[in-house]
Image (cartoon, rainbow, N blue to C red):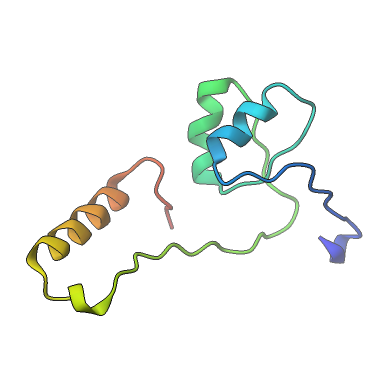
Length: 95
């Protein structure tokens, strides 16, 4: 944004996109968030979506566990379930 002479002023910060959308639907504010989330949540609240005029930083998502659970069958099964769900979820990142 600095390259374009723009500066972002953050008025609200929240750990959940859904609460940010709820606040946005009652204000004149703008919200920046990953497009795969914007597309799905905007449909529910009737909000408009526009692409940013710059390339945003890429967000990485991690599945993390303690190494002592590497060979644990139940833990392995759970990790596989989480990964399978994220790969097929409409809220998952698409490349």
